Amino acid sequence: MRIPFSTIMRADLYLKAKRVEYWDRTSLREIIMETALEAYLKDNPSTQMPLPIKERKNQSP
Image (cartoon, rainbow, N blue to C red):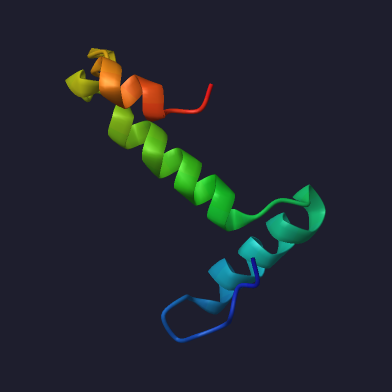
């Protein structure tokens, strides 16, 4: 993911993000998305409920 510099992001934060992308060879999009998704799902009771059979058949293993 290419991080464009803008006035929305502070210059020091932008530089840190670019360093992480370069040195860790990772995408900040992946990190942010995974972290946000894990936080959202952590205490959500629906994660413990089984999917209906019809819906399970539509899912790839």
